[in-house]
Length: 292
Image (cartoon, rainbow, N blue to C red; front, side, top):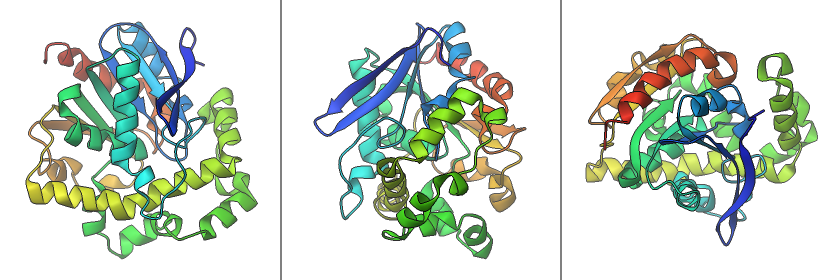
């Protein structure tokens, strides 16, 4: 995977080390994975982006994969999306990229949202995949949402999820190497069997229902909006559209300039439909070269 990419561990703070792959040259693109993946989920997307003329940066999020962050805190702030966005801005600075486009999927898209709201001066554009703001999900939480997305509320419970998942991580997290790719699957499986990684991933969700929601609600009270161009993509064989209709209608309340479309794929689009994802990304990124 990631032929020609450098692989290193970068200390972005005294208590946070980010494991990152990076390669290519040109305008910078930061790819942020979701749960329960690592950066290797982008293995079929990152090299073509580099070949197309971009500097591509592919980290593991705080506590995921081979990245290591601070110990969990009672208020979950150590694993908030604001904290993780801070990791990413420092990482990009240390790698020499003062401006970049962020592409986030699933949990990584919430970090992308935080970057767009807190660090807009660093961004050219943002791409959020399979994403609505956490506060929008929770404001619409009904029986359908709770049934389909029950894991949000289970993961938020203290201690029990750790015991359940660590008892048999292979049974809990199912992955198919024929779809994921053998090396990606092996990296992901090794991470799932690390109790520290499992704890960090759960803290991500605990932060989501508490501090992250509060941060988003404060954004709304203050009238803060995404000012950089935003591309929203969603997997047509996932349930975002089924739950909410057109996701763009919700995002227009958050962003000044938003476009997007569904992609014919299941949830893990970078693995299941990389060509279709690249077809959606590249025109947006090429336009980005003219936006400063």
